[in-house]
Image (cartoon, helix red, strand yellow):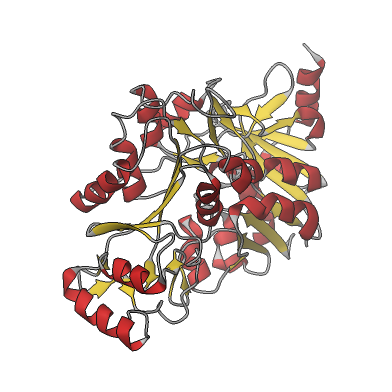
Length: 435
């Protein structure tokens, strides 16, 4: 038995024993998504229900699974703080049970290092330990390194189903305070069926992608459609925030080789992943795939080093000035900035780069236009008018860079459904946008 295994056994406990390291008033944090340690959090929640704990805060960028800190009965005892409104926490945030921290995804590690006053406990679900004493954080690299530097206590939950992934998202046994074992199946993201509109928009974007381009695809039907429609391209690369199933397909069919990238040649680079079991199996022990901190993957200057970088993201609505809202329905918070701005800026820095923001032109069965004269009152501007490059709906694809405000307004109106275009033109003239 090597010394790392001896350290492992000395620190091994039950989830209930691990939870005893958490004290009232502690600030706790888990990496993005699937790395939340459900057994440890469950044991902490039980202590809170028993009246043993109060005032604990759980910080996480995206919460995918139900957990005690989302239980309204534990408010004030074990509370959630979201860094991205989505997943199972969305409803509670909208109803005012939990709060959120506005941010660009790339800035979260620096926030933990320099802005947040403290981090008492880092807890995470990780892979089994390798012979060198390292655990992989599998599907999340975003904040792990920064949290590890900040945390006073490190608690791990070992799940043999977590993929072992290369890159910079590992925790060594020497840094661990206590650990438990709790192997369980991983949640999967159901495959979204692609609508005809998704495919139409996706094709317009795919037609703009040149061989040798490097890709970032966001979440949702339209980015997935783009991935599906790029299979006839050559020597594509991937440097992305979220790794998706459509990217696995691009790699397997040979469209992605990563050989034309100026850095991380031959490697697919991401900061978190959520998808099918097939995707998790693909990532496991795959030296061609690396998970890195988000202040690297989403660093606009790193992104900009890739010629012909293509960024594809979605939004909720756009106004005639070119302002993009991707995170709220009026004042009702729905999502977050995430990495959209990081990648729009990165594509703008790339030689030949193209940043696409796409959406369907209407909602509610075609009765409401997502193209507005001005954004819905209270809506949050995610990407400013000065940074938007391409906008796409099923009706058109337009490039706003270098255009006058008047021409931009006309181009944006062309994205709207025909039944709304006359009214939008009338409003644009009232605002002296169209001259």
